[in-house]
Length: 290
Image 1 (tube, rainbow, N blue to C red):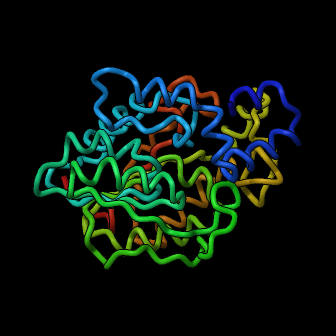
Image 2: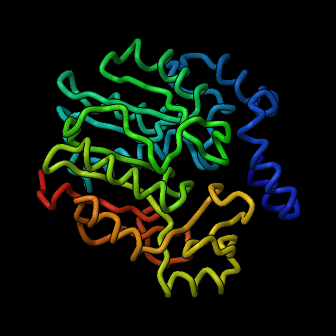
Image 3: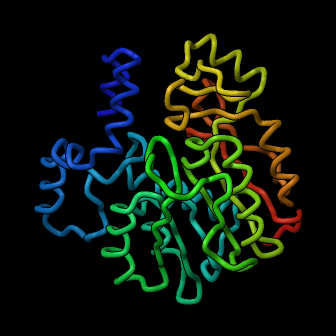
């Protein structure tokens, strides 16, 4: 749906559709009803494939992206089966589902999201089979996905005690958040990470070279929003790229040390890349735990 809109609709209509895609879930369910019925009727299904109408993150293959990032968690983040994991922005379990095959009986997973229907699906379909996987709904404001949210992202306190997680990750979350909100989340993530804990996050990162490529390729990231670039000036949270230098400063101030190199993605037209988005791995207070 979103891909067709980008191709055929004018910018103003695209902006309206982006808002409607999240604000009118009934229309989304109707649009994807044939696909969802086919999944329900498929012989031998394992019950861990969410309805297409709840998959609100990107257009890629849901299961394949989950498996891809599990490898990054293990190979880049040195995630071990017995560790305590936190996912910020768990959605409908794209990353949690593959983690159920990796974390052992002494490991655990906590996830939270601002989308109540997606959290409800995870609670109903994942937690009963994997009791050490827990999901929470938090009513944080985001102009794209939760415009009626009660809590401001710039002052939101993560619902966890300090220093209790070994590994925290966010995928396709900071690509939909404003810079002041990211700054607060980084401070909060540092608070809940144990000394030596790791943070893996994806971004759209900007520098002079990246801006030049985006301009040459006539990228949709063309609308300035402060020092950032958005694809939609009326709805910057739809997708937004931030200055790498600014992000690095915020990591330093939060007590997080970036583990070089940054794994840059294909989104900005790079010839060599690891994934679609840029991947940043950091250690709390610079202490590496392997």
